[in-house]
Structure formats: C-alpha cells, structure tokens
Length: 296
Image (tube, rainbow, N blue to C red; front, side, top):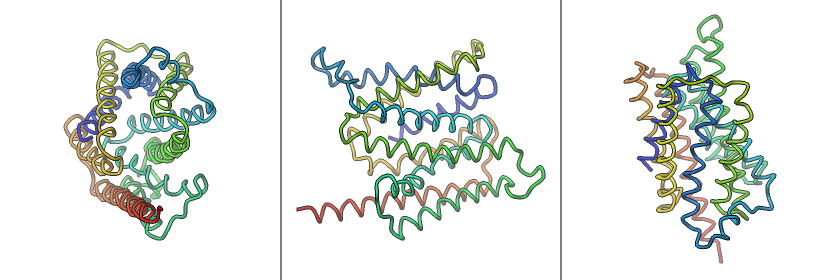
C-alpha cells in the first residue's frame, strides 16, 4: 500500500508536469487506455476456462456501471485539472475530502444514520478546506487569490464529491457484480468518454512528452497492481491510514521539482482533513464491530 501510494503520487507529478503543454483531458485518455491491459491482466488471473472471459463483462446493471464511469471520469478530470493550477501538496490535501463526502452522501443514498462523532469529524475536515483556502487568500478580494487558483481549489474539492459518489456506487454494484466486472467496465467506459473528447482538445505531444505519457501509463499500471495486491492481502479498513502517506511524497516532490514550499496553512489544513478522515475510519470500524457483536 505504501509503494502504491508513492507511485500514484509520482504519477500525479508527471501529470502536473504535462499540464502546461498537453490538455488534461488528453492525458486522462492515455491514463485510462493504459489501465485497460493492466486491469485485464489482473482479472484474467482468476479465469480458468475461455468461456469465463466473456462472463467478466456480462452484467444486468449496465446503467449503474455507466453512472459509476461518469462520476469516475468527473473525479479524475477534477484531480487532473487541479494538478495543473495548484501546488502538488495542496491538490493532494484537498483530494482527501472523499471520506467527508461519503459520510454526508451515505445519508440520502444508503439511508445511514450519522451520529455526532462522524458529523464532528466532517466539520473538522471542512474546516481544513477553509484553512487551505484562506491561506491562498480566498475571501479577501482583489488579486489575493487569482481566479484560476480559486477555480483550482473548488475543483479539487469537487474531486472529493465525485469520488465519494463513485465509492457509493461501487458499494451498490458490488452487491451483485464482481470487482473484476466493475473495474473492467470502469476502464472501458472512461477510456471511451475521454476518447470522444480527443478531437476537440488534441495537441500532438513532443518526444519528451511521449516519454512522460508512457511513464504515466507504466507507473500508474504498476501502482494499480500493487494496490490490488494490498487489498487482496489485508482489509481495506486496515490499509486506509497508509494512503495518507501521499501527503509526504507530494510535499517532497513538489519541493524538489518545482520549489513548492508548503505554507503553514496548507500543512494545518492537511492535518485537519487527514485527522477527520482517520476518525471517520475509526468510527466505521467501531460500528462494524458493534454490528458483528449484534449478529446472531
């Protein structure tokens, strides 16, 4: 999990480096296209007979897969755009808001009851967002916070919302669909969505950019395999805290590659958001143990 998180952060750094020259939608296409053979390789490990290959894509819930691919595409677009206008550490910290939005959206979509503990964590997390935004000069008017940076902060937060929607849709789909089927449809549909946009944004990359694009595919693919192996070896709840190690990698890479020194507001906001996410995870574990204890 630590290695996967580090490689995903390296991939984000490559996306940020390309952002000034190649449209982020074009980068998204290559990221999704390169993911297909990796996902297929992982899925085919469980196939024992040729007839089982077609079964991986067989589904009665295509509208659910389509909606999940839409939210996934919007989440990736938000993340990639934010990378082009924000320092790497700030973008990373703001994308940690997914657990906060999952908690809020679980009320209308899953009918869950959210107690005072998780509501308090959500408020602390959103306070962290405000701290980062205020550190950038938000709400001060004038030229304190350029419009493009304002948009970048807002879009980075929207990533958490779209990613939370994706998470909840996966929970619903997983009741009847295998993880291989969900991931395969995600990769195929997200590639198709971004391919449809290519004629409107295409910029022919130079050789240096081609190498970065290949690097994004390679590093992202290896990271996906490592993430899959991690989830196969331990419970997701046990791995959750390690995903926050990406803030350390993003601070280091941003500092070394672009001289981005994180401000005190960024660090304080990141601490609040991460603390909120970890506390929500803790409460989820407590509730899971309580449900298990009540089970017959």
